[in-house]
Image (cartoon, rainbow, N blue to C red; front, side):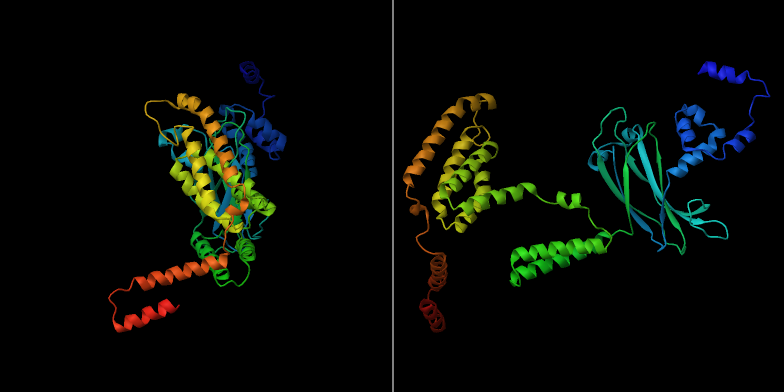
Amino acid sequence: MDGILKNFTTRSPAEEISRSQYSLVATDVTEEAVQLWLELPDEVRADSSWEIFRSKWEKEHDYLIQNNKNKHSVLLKLTGPFLSEAYEKKLNIHEKRNMSRMDIWIEKWIPNGPTQDLGEGSDYETIESSIYWTIILENQAEDFHESETRSSVLVLPSSSANQSVLAVRMATTSNVTTPFTLSYTLDPLDGTTGIIYACILLFALYALIVFEVINRTMAAVLLSTTSLAVLSIAGERPSVPEIISWLDVETLLLLFSMMVLLSRGKIWPLITMLCGMTSVVSLLLDNVTTVLLMTPVSIRLCEVMELDPIPVLLAMVLFCNLGGTATPVGDPPNGINFTNFTLHMTFGILLVAVQTYLQLRFIFRDTNKLRLTESKDVQDLRRQILVWRRAADSLHHLSPEQLIVKDRLERK
């Protein structure tokens, strides 16, 4: 590079190109010329003689948005090699200053001249500008970065300009090219308005379920579709990948697996799955916590299959204790580390688990013992009778009026 500069400085005046002649030649800067300019050293590009290249580069990185309806806010979503918002909050001011960053802001432009043309080649005047939105970039020395999506709403002051464009402007302190994708939404849905819409839809869903207007499944499908329609009308239509990300795949798989077992109508596969799942969970959680988590699911499954939940819950408790005994998590020991405890207990617990399962299969070899002896209607009737009986027994030392009420309760 020093040799090139030396040869350049020793040229004769006739061979030199003046700055005015250079400007005349460079009025039509091509894209290839801009790329060559970007490869020059920073101290060379900082010279004022490259202003037309710098202007060309900056103009190509301004994203213009037609603003015929005079909108004042824009929701920007950027996906690229950015730090997550949670990690960025952990950084102090000194650390942020030493890292590469990208500044994004929007400006409202109006065309200059009598034509008021909004074409790309028009000359614009900035009348408003938003605050800066700063994003910290990942370490650019690494070859691979996991994409992070960041979003923010940039707001402009209100103005009476009818014909204007919104320019999304960006500046970065990084010395290398930063790839990213950009999407925007004009005049996005306000947070307070979104909460109001969500509450209305939620109350409508509960009304359909409580008053049994339609089936609960159809009510959920109808209101979820209505929610997507409301978002689309408000200009916040989600993409298909975004909708899929809202689904809780783990819960759906669990429900699907249980429905498969129920559809097959086999009792012991269901009990085996519940006991096995309880044992595995109790390896990592406390026994009481495991029982509290698994009991509601087990009772619900027993109701669907018309089983007596007491034997099933007793089997779950046995296997919960066995699984918890295998590790120090379920039953914390004293003075023994995790590895030694697990190595000494695992083999014995496996033998006891097999023996317990075989014993349960032998005790309940007649599956009719696991089924309810009374129908659900009879059980509901007995429960109502018990409630009325307790209400009658709670009346002591009664007055004549209370005796009349007790007599009616006993007749009921």
